Amino acid sequence: MKKHLIALTAILALSAQALAQVSVTAPWIRATVPQQESTGVFMHLESASDARLVGVSTPAATRSEFHQMDMRGQTMKMAQVDSIELAAGKGVNLASGGYHIMLIGLKRQLKAGEVVPLTIVVEGKDKKRERVTLKVPVKPLTFAGPGAGPSRHH
Image 1 (spheres, rainbow, N blue to C red):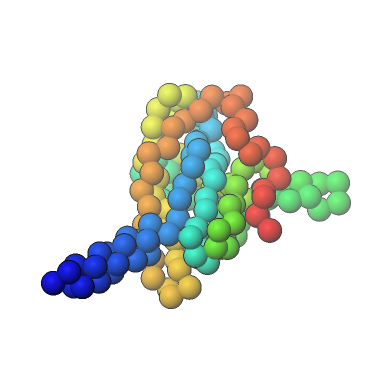
Image 2: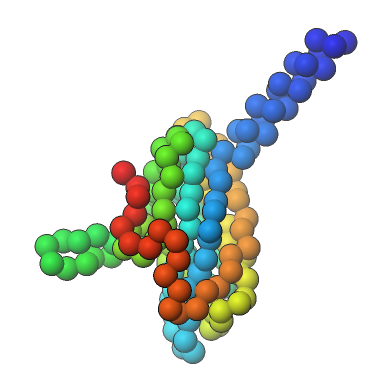
């Protein structure tokens, strides 16, 4: 009986670890002005195993996309990307000047102090997907956030 209990405990621990493969810290959304149609979402992600960020959604916008900003010569360019790689144990900042999430087609103005639901989808190497639902605070237009600047993603 004791062996079965130990085995069951080990299986449950491994299952919980597989389901909680990604941790999210310091998420925030930049506040908007009236009639503004888009804004950025920023956070720090870390995955226990190799994975990819493959989806994002929120009821606050008609669509949500992953974007990357980088310097091309003397010009900063922003482009949509399909996914963001999450290497095992290596943190990735979604921050101004690097990878980030864009909320496009905002349904209303987002004001500092509000909280917006946001769901991210992470795909493991086994192609299984995990949905992580967050409650993301809206910060003032002037808020820079932790990790502002170039992404630490390599």
